Image 1 (tube, rainbow, N blue to C red):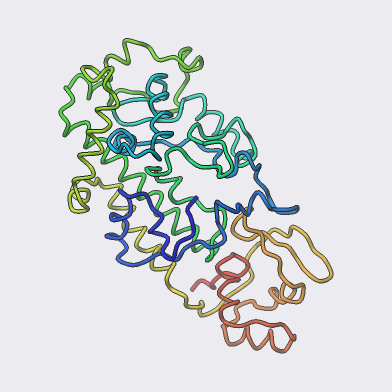
Image 2: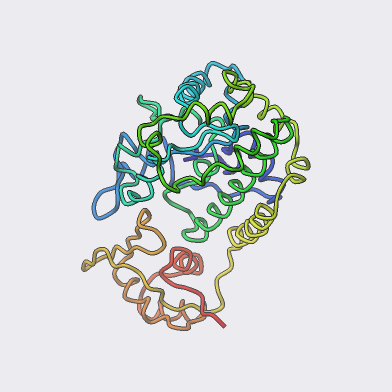
Length: 359
């Protein structure tokens, strides 16, 4: 979901970018094969999994924390107008809207939970902020949330890359939660409103009649919003102003235990991402054989969205590498007349066709 740039962090939303830089203290290699302008999933041909051209990977409803929503009501640039209009419509509809942000409707959450197999191909799951047109653009791209900022269909480092971006997503989601809560407290919401937020049922825990019909109980809305009723967009704007002015030190001071734990996991995942060493010994890993021909084999390693086509001799060689050191693996390949170097060997590990020998 990110455009092609030299450093992947350059494509992060403006608020997120300095926070992630402060945590990682280094650039992130870009995902060159995951390009929105020329979506590889739309162009995919069987046996590869493909996406519909009118949905792509946008079959997901983001959960926008209050301060990200507020970006569209503080900045009046023309390019943000489509997103602002969509968010205004969300606020008028009220479903999923609280001082903490704009969540997915309960019915959508239920449908998504049981329809994950339709990701990329069901228009019923398409994001409400998706903009029709030639560029298939996103109305909230400028301040998109953690999932949309970190999801890629393909990864240069295979499962290593996916693990990094998943760690970053979990970290940013934890940060979003902590900052959204900090906003409602620091902006002085009365205790009655804070209590109403604290007592709100967890998403997906039972559906009431109003939720099924897309309605919100007026009394509940009044309890949640209090004096900010009819001025919800101004409250969201105040949240953005508060968070934008914090800087990383201010953000860090507001992080809870989960975000700090996620930060440690993220740093470890980043270390693995930039480490290009080959394991001391490898062994074949379980893979799904998608197609086998005389000249090539198509296999699924770490992801159904990123199939690999291997020359048949290389595929047949994998079973001979049980416990092989890099030197031994290259020697076995040379004896078999198969082209293999250390970079390709590392790629086989990255993509889950080989795995490090434990112990």
